[in-house]
Image (tube, rainbow over all chains, first blue to last red):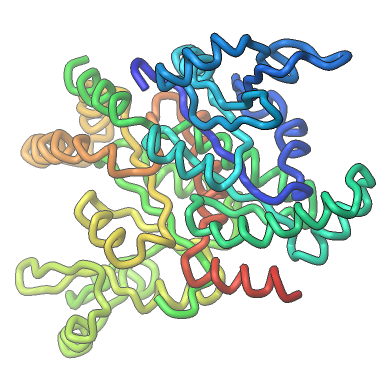
Length: 206
Length: 206
């Protein structure tokens, strides 16, 4: 990533662990940040907004960006592309923002490969599998088949905790929020290799 | 490190950058912690207390601990040993504390080798070399020769920024303190490999 002054915070963890609630509640307490949004070729649904729910692009644009290596990850589902574009990420980094990704363990691994020196990562989970199941049922948004799939995924994802810098066990929400804000503030202090070299130059010379 | 439940925070950076002021000012805002103290075989000076200024031990004890691999680092100066013993560190980790080390870039490298999965590290520096020189002269505790030596050391140490997780540029003390508290809180969320495995076991089974 050229000219990057910002840094990256990656959150992973089972669906139902509270990642989006933490991001929402932290709000501007963690400074100027950019929450990464997926890009898709599927048409917007009723009420969906470009740049809020997704970046909506044409198939041609998406495929050109794939060829240009502009996607951190992408997949084709029911004939539509979905992916994490690096274009808005690069822009946000150049503006000195903290870029926040809510991605899975595979996305985290790829991001580490490509921009590891800018990344601070945190795994967010419930205190137990039982508690995860309870929360998934309580929110009442998913049918049994989807709940079972989320649990299967969680059992796989939990094995990757050691690949993350930090672990937040979201038992008490206020404590988890305090921990998340600390991690996000710390993530701002991450210096990529190029940023570090530039700092050393100016430190010596100034 | 067996049975470790706590985690480790390492601070490095030029003498005069404000590391000890940050640690002192952070106090108990960063939770239950243990600040690592050097062990030495030199006799205590007037007013020095065992377990506060140093751990004072006999030459025989020190050498036995060297053989047992109990020192993270040690050196002999004017016939006396000085070193960072892992014994109190292990005890503090077992008690779930955040262990704080104020060590140099070499000590950091050795600690990474030995207990890297428990470590969060931060480099603390002034905004510039000129500012470092100004602060060293202002505190008026060192003569010119020592100031020159500290500056030479700083020019070497600054090259190691990239080896650290985070960088704090101590320009405004209150901002630096806020950043340091965030890093220390984050460091508490670091999970070593063994801790992670144990957590995963209990997460699945509970």
